[in-house]
Length: 144
Figure (cartoon, one colour):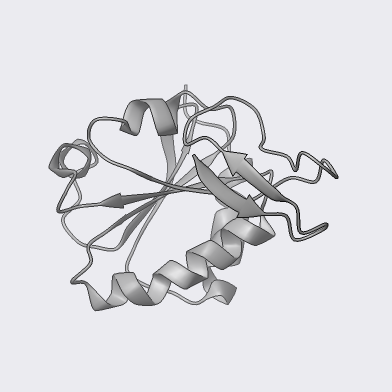
């Protein structure tokens, strides 16, 4: 569980790492940002079983560009509360996830819908550059 403070009413809410639907404030019912960590053991549960698009950030703590893009991704997750879930995956601790998506450089950003990759981006970028990329990705249907 993660504790998130609602930006609308300041109520503190518990949000599970994995669930269906959209997390909402228990007091005012506004959508809450959903930002969680996942690894090899819980990736499928946290990412693939949800109903909303997932922005996956594959990063490492020693990676300078990864550390630069992290606050940008959190900002976007807050802006897109109720529309996208941000899942951070430490590549050093989750080699199976990295192998699954053929990650050769970090940070690697993936947008998944219904468990399928609909967009991929490697490297760091500003919020102005990522905002339209994310908007397009979360509205794109997965390939069938």
